[in-house]
Image 1: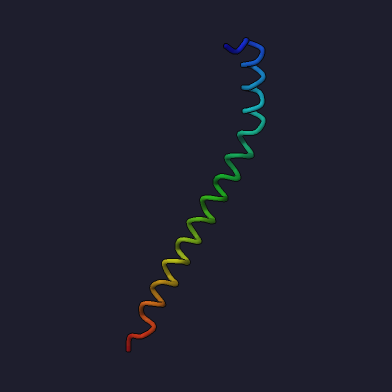
Image 2: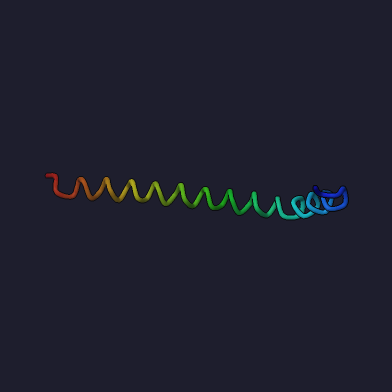
Length: 52
């Protein structure tokens, strides 16, 4: 089992890293959402290319 000092050190490490991780994760989510939107748009354009 973890000692109190070890648990405190783990909590401090998490607190130091969590802000950067949340920022990176938000940027990653936005980029993936944009990529999915572009993929959907490309598929739409591809599907309508032969029409008309």
